[in-house]
Length: 421
Ligand SMILES: Cc1cc2nc3c(=O)[nH]c(=O)nc-3n(C[C@H](O)[C@H](O)[C@H](O)COP(=O)(O)OP(=O)(O)OC[C@H]3O[C@@H](n4cnc5c(N)ncnc54)[C@H](O)[C@@H]3O)c2cc1C
Picture (cartoon, rainbow, N blue to C red):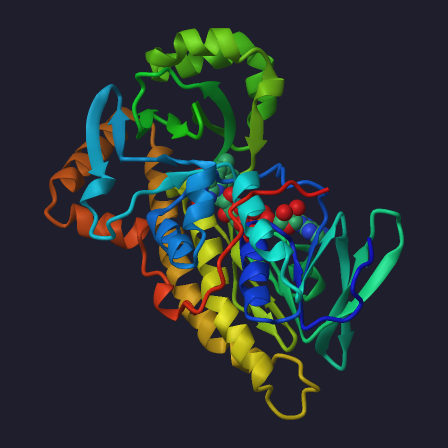
């Protein structure tokens, strides 16, 4: 594999944010290189639910046929139960957006983006290439160093580096952009079980005190289960034994008991996720921008991380194309921080709102005293009956998205997902 050593835009990270941005830029004729350290589209860390605004955006961008060909699952509603009582129900079909959240495996989604870009002359993809450091001259980012699978290092010079390398972004660290990390009170263990045929397409959150499970119907025929555990509590959980872990989940949702016994055999069937948010005062420098989880890490709550990553890519693509066409003076064509300022301001507002809501939700779910539980149930019941319930959730789940900025002069897309070699 030959890696380009000079390009207009170098994107570090081929997750949802980087893969989509690479495709959108290549479709505009921008020379773009996506560098991804992994050699397949499998990801250790992945969200699979796409909120409705992303589903709408992707269709507007021409990805509809590829999504339809692959298949996905539409989630119709979410119900919250606390201490055995139903406290809140949100029917996604009642939102004015007129689309439902969809569930599709992240490798397939990235594959769809990749397939759409693969044949475009201005697109390059460096599989297995890991970012190691930025190339900085006179305070301006001029490119990056990539470690290739054979151990060699390539210097890629570019007019803009996009850090789309996720929640532990190395690009962010190399750029000296400080992130405020706020750990959530608890961490998460997740796993999948086969979904019984009569289960339905509703998401459910079942809480008892400070323990909860999130049960999400997942494409094609799974249930994705998320179970909270105390911060850094995995060791203790393991010491209490696997049977007691399964029993704890079955106590929250007895319907899961037979599935747990048949299909969840050991800790190896589970994935641990440390939950935190990361926020930055500065997302850009001359020659550099961060997007997706690298710029603002979301938590799994309300399934918004992939959504905001996709919206970042959709709204940034035209900004980059414009900035490259009209570089500010004296920069040797490097995209300047000032040219990205409006994008940063708009996206920071949206992501800040999502994070605030996620924190509120997490704080509520961590309550455990008898009085707190009663108050919490009452609060959710009141919310359930509020006339503005759908307006409020619409603002959080279907927060303003950027489809108006999408360039609709689109070439048709390949509908076939591919697997990276
Ligand atoms: C348990 C859990 C469940 C979740 N479920 C959902 C959900 O259902 N819906 C939802 O919307 N969100 C969900 N999220 C959040 C969501 O997964 C993330 O917000 C989203 O993946 C962010 O996309 P991204 O492209 O910014 O980063 P990532 O998806 O993290 O992608 C970053 C990419 O960069 C690559 N990379 C990293 N370092 C380097 C390097 N040095 N060089 C080159 N490449 C590198 C990685 O391999 C990866 O491909 C969930 C999160 C958790 C913890």
